[in-house]
Image 1 (tube, helix red, strand yellow):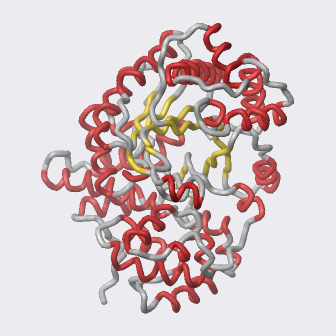
Image 2 (image 1 turned 180 degrees about the vertical axis):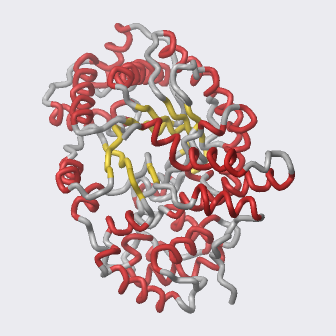
Image 3 (image 1 turned 45 degrees about the vertical axis):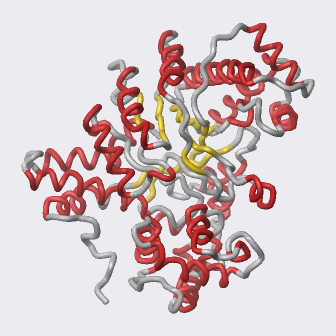
Length: 465
């Protein structure tokens, strides 16, 4: 059978091929948002088998297996790692036209040199082949990163994290810049289950007894200072939408006091509180010169029966149809009006919001910084060929794709970095097709420089890691 992942995979003409191989392929990777484990990087973990590094925590694969009728035993249950892999091998042929089919074979090819199409019949042999390779030192978790030319990556941690693994990584000088992003959503979502319990944990970590709203702000500021001292320059928020509701300090104090007393608060009160705490946080990010990220639009934990059985983050999320534009505009405008809007990246999960986000960023790019407010790459359900192309087309039509800071993995797997290649091939093909049709000039240097900047240069300038 002809090799599936060829040198010119996804590249439809000579222009696309030249752009990819000469300007995109060899650019280092800056993966500025992911959920990799700092402890595994610090320990340079050697994975026993591919299921541990490939299937654990991968919601994309879990959802595909469930759709095929694979029993939960082989997904999150007590099946052996080999049985899990064989169940995934059985699933792969049914993922045709799903990005999982591309990602699976890119990853097998790039890390382990496997050209075979994974299926039920060869799953056992491929499992043994890959597991043997994983025992080689160059295939430790750091080795896997270095194979993909990862220069910088940024994990995501809660304010209560002690960052000891990041400190260890820095001391070891591993040859890859590893930073963290501050993720304080548990302090923001006052209407979430377990909020007061979380405040107790934050109090202990910050060594501040949180008895009022000012105490909460003081505790978060203390943790921001700690993260900053440990090299953090980014934050991230995963919210359904940005909140905005007018409030007074006395209202916020009363709302917070009610919550501490474990009383019910209304949706209106929650909206006011979220607005107040997020504005405080964002003004603080500006003070510290951080980049702030907002991932907006996920409808999480839809299947309550399975949530009760398996817990959070087990693959029961979908795209939400929240109203985004008005409150997002009001929130950013409030910060901008105080000249306290830091560099900002906005991500939407609902593709219906593409043009909303593409035009929203233009409202707050004030000429002070190139691409100060960014529309982030296709995220979660949209980080596939069609979703990324639609994002790039909307950005091209309504903004400057030449200022775009490119791709990230948002992944928990050390085998996910060929997604940068997937993005880069799609990017080059998009430009290459328009060079061939005459819609873009057939000036390889002009277009190629733009490609190189989107793949690496813009992110390198923007984050200044």
